[in-house]
Length: 199
Length: 372
Image (tube, rainbow over the protein chains, first blue to last red):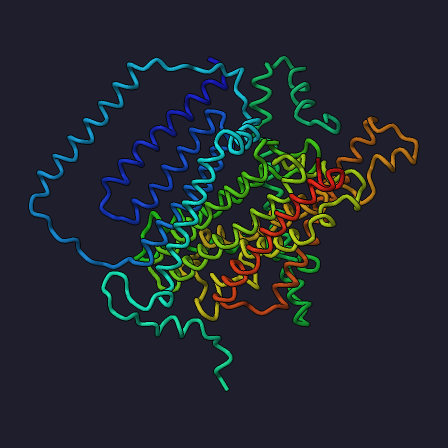
C-alpha cells in the first residue's frame, strides 16, 4: 500500500467514526447544547468525506451552508431561549423508546440491504474532474438544472418574506393565532432614534 | 504559467540526489511550508502588537513601550511570555469541555486559511482550486467557537458577547462574499494565484482597486467587522460587556483569542492586498524592468530577485493596511449594535449586490478590461 492510500484510509476511518459517534451523540445526549455543537462536528466530518471524494467545492459549500449558517442559527436559537426547565415526565417512555428504536433499526437494515444488493458503478479516479468541478457545477446550474435552482430561490424568498411578516408585528393589527389586538409598544420604542428625544 | 521559483521541485530533486524515493521526499517536504507559514503568522502578530502599542501611543501623544529592547520591540514577546506562564483558570461553574474547545475553534480556522495566501507564483502552501472560497467557508466556522466560549463561561456578559459576535459575523459575511464574487467574476477563477496573475498586466494600473473601488471599500469594512476591530468591536465592548466572550478567560486560553484576532487581522490585510492591490506584484512590472536593463527573465539571479520582491511587496501592502486598521482603531468611536446591523444589512448588502450586477454588465460590455 502506498503512503497516499494509507493516509486516505486513515482519514476515512477517523471521519466515519466521528460521523457515526457524533450523530449518535446528537440523538442520545440529554443536553440540547451539546447536541447542537456535536451536529456541527458531524457536518464538518461529512465535509471531510466530500474532500476525500475529490469534491472540494461541495465540501467548502457544505461547511459554509451547514456549519456556518444552519448550525450557527440552531445554536443561536437555543441560546436565545435557553430556559432552565425540567421536561415533563412521560408515562410510557419505555414503550415509546422501544418502538422508536425498532423503527430506526428497521430503516437501518433496509439501507444496509440496499447497499449490499445494489451494483455500484465506481468511477475511475483518472477520470475525476477534481478542480474543474466548480465550473461544471455552474454550467449545470444554469442549463439543465435552471428550473429547480430558480424554484429553490423563490422558496427561500417566500420563507424570508414570511419571517419578516411574523417578526414585524406592526404589519398586522391582529395576532394571527389568538386574534387579540397586537401590542406594538416594543417595536415603537426600538424604531425611534435614541438620541433625538433627549432634548 | 510555470515560471518563477519552484522550491518544492528543487527540494525534492535535492533529496532524491541522496537516493530517497519521491514519496519520502514529499513527506519530508510537506511540514516545511506549514511550519514556515505558522512561524510567519506568529512573527507577524508580534510585529502587529508592537505597532499597535507604538501607534496608539503616538495617537494619544504618549511614548509607548521603550525599555524592552530598542524602541520596545521586545515588549510583545514579554507580553506573550507573561500569558504563557499565567495560571490557567476554568471557573467552577463553567462547562469545562466547551470552555476549552471554544478558543481552539476560534484559532484553527484562521490558521488553516493561511493555506491559500500566496507570496509569489509558487510561494504558497497549496494552490487549491477553490482558493478564496475556502477562506470564506473557513471563516464561517469561527462564530461557533465564539458562541461556544460565550455559553460555556456561564456569565451573562460572555453570553451576550458571544451572541453579538455571531450576529455580527453572519451579517458581514454576506457583503464580504459578494464583493469577493465580483473579483472572481473578473478573474474567471477562485484560485488566489490566478487572481493575482490577472492583475499583473500593467503594474499598478491593472490592480483591481481601480476596477473595483466600491468592492474594495465594502470588503475592507466587512473585513474589519469580521476581525472585530474598533469601529465594530461590539462583541468585546469594554464599557458595556467587560470583555465580551473573553471575560472569564485567563492565561494561554486568553492568549489563543488574542493570537486569533491578530492573525485574522493580518490575514484580512493580506487578502485585501491579494484581491485588490495586486498581491506580490511590484507597481512597475518586473518583466518590464528586466527588459529595460536587458536582463534575461529566466536567469536564476532575476528569479531570486523577483521572488524576494514579491514577498516584500505582499508584506509591505499588508502592513500598510494593518497600519490603517490600527489608526482607525485609535481615532474612531464605536458604533452602536443597531447602527452596526443597519450598516451591514441596509447599506453594504445592497451596495455589494449592485456592484456585482454592474461588474457583470461591464464584463459583458468591455471584456478586455473586465476579464473575458
